[in-house]
Length: 333
Ligand code: SAM
Ligand code: SF4
Ligand code: SF4
Image 1: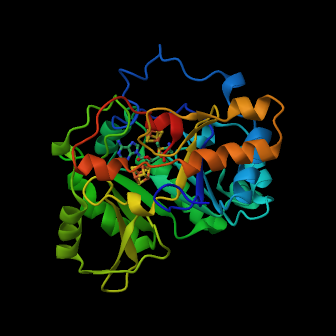
Image 2: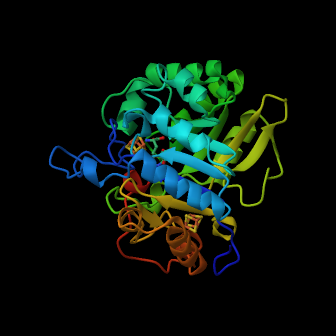
């Protein structure tokens, strides 16, 4: 099954909640996502059974990898139960989780026991003052590091660590982060600050390009490029020449990778988005709830994917896109 640019559907990212215990300025700024913000009601969220059904139908269409995200996915109660349900689906060979890590330490073992294959933990600095500026709620670095340690101890090493770099806020934390995770064998990935959603007041001046980050790190610890592990890999991988592991760069702004984009996203209320920067989703929840059988859900998915022609990041580079977009906390990263 391919879209209009011959891209297959391989990965499904499932948001399990639009809520979060952080208020990262680049994702859910407090002044917008404050006490008056209307989050989804419980009845609007897809149930675990509905998510598993959607995943199973998607697997029938070629999806092999699932990623649970949000909002903060560990805020969804009993996430282990969902993971166990997903792990039993034929065709799914990889279940990953993206989390801010604050609730991971106590949960890592049971998530792995349920069938979690990989975890990505987001962390933007190693000092509490800078991290608090990024996460908006004063969350401590130690809690996240404890989550990373627990995940590694539970069998998920090496852990991937995502760092969004914002000029003038945490760009001075880059070398400390690289040093810390190199020594521990985890894979740090630098994410260019993106213009997702409409609320983060994004400006190109705040983006630190992957090329600049590579030079900064390479000047301290020489780097050598690595070949992608599979076609369409989002992060460009580089290894430390001294053999101390690798780093990744996710350069959505300066080196767009739409050409190999095999990802679809489902919001917590069952809207399918074929691009992270989509303006609207396709309502799958109605289909899941109106008595339609699996083949009807499968046909709808196939039709939506077949019509897909998203390549926002490539067009952004050509400065030809404008208008409202979906929020990251709603569909996940
Ligand atoms: N709450 C979880 C977390 O933070 O890992 C999962 C959801 S979060 C939306 C997924 C990823 O998106 C995180 O790694 C986060 O840093 C990244 N992200 C959010 N807003 C971003 C932005 N404006 N630019 C680049 N990355 C962003
Ligand atoms: Fe929450 Fe993750 Fe968004 Fe930060 S990036 S506000 S942790 S959803
Ligand atoms: Fe995929 Fe859209 Fe990102 Fe391009 S901009 S890589 S199409 S999600």
